[in-house]
Length: 63
Image (tube, rainbow, N blue to C red; front, side, top):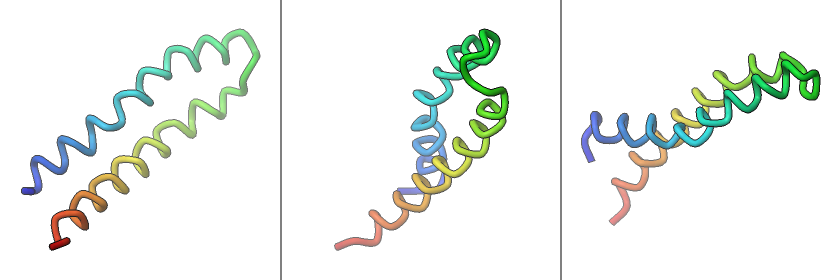
């Protein structure tokens, strides 16, 4: 699998998490969750995309 395809798959795999951001904003605005949780979301998305990218490369090298 080439690099652009792996990158696209890794980024698309983060879409379900991105869909929760408006919900988290609402919960933070209501005081149910802390605002710091919203600061953790970009870091979690970056780690998720990186792990997916690396795992797709590892899957390619298997026989």
